[in-house]
Amino acid sequence: MAYATYQESVLYIHGGFLSSDSNYTTRWDQFYSLDLSRNWNTARPLWSEVPSVGPVSSQISSAGGYTMSIWRGIKGKHNVTIWDMANPRTFAATYSFNTQSWEELPAFPPPVPGPLRFYQAATSNFGSLERVYIPGCAGTNMLVYDRSTNETNVLPMPKFGNLTSWDRYSFVWVNYRNSFFLVGGVGTPSSASYLHEYRVFTDAGAWEVLY
Image (cartoon, rainbow, N blue to C red; front, side):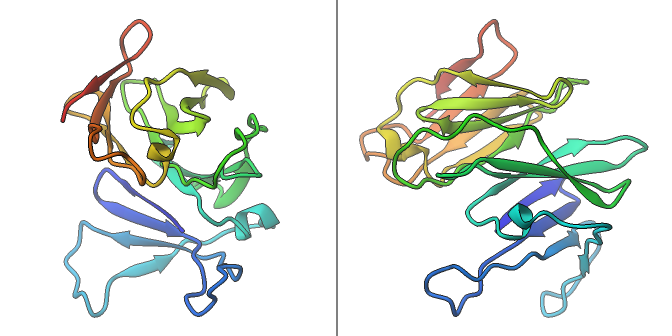
C-alpha cells in the first residue's frame, strides 16, 4: 500500500494486501481519496474512489511494498506517482487527474542486489523545480528523478548506521525550510542519529544531522 497527502487537504491511498493472506500475495488495485478539509465522523469517513479510464498495467495492480509522491499538474490539477523500487523490479507510473489515466514512466536503473527494503519517495516543492528523491534506493545512495526531463540521477549519501538504515524510514519535504527531513529507519543502530536534514538547493546538496 502507498499513500501521500496533497497540501494537507487530501489523503490518497493506493493498493494494499488482503489481511487474511499470510504470504501477502493477494493484492488489491484500489485507489481512494479522503477529503481532509471537511469535517467527518471517524465511523463514516468521506472516502471517494478515484476513477481510472482505460487499461491499467498489471505492474500497477500487482505493486506491493511501494511508495507514492505527488506532483503539481496543469489546469490546477495535480498528479500522483507510485514507485515500486523493491528488488528485483523497478517500476513507476503517474496518475493524471486531468485524463483520469495512468502513464508508465521511463525505465529506471535496477536496484542494487541485497535484502528487501522499502523506501519513501518525496517531491521537492520549490518554485517550478519539482524532483522526486528516494534515499537508499540506489544501494546506500539516493535516486533522484526530474519530471521535466524524465532523467534519473544517483546522488551520494553519507553513511548513517548501516545498509538496513534505509528501510522503512520516513522522508518528507518541509516547505518552511525548503529541505527534506529523514527520520529513523529499521535497523538503525541506537548509537546513530535518527533525524537528518537534506538541503537540496546548495551546490551539491548537503546532509546535516539534526538529532
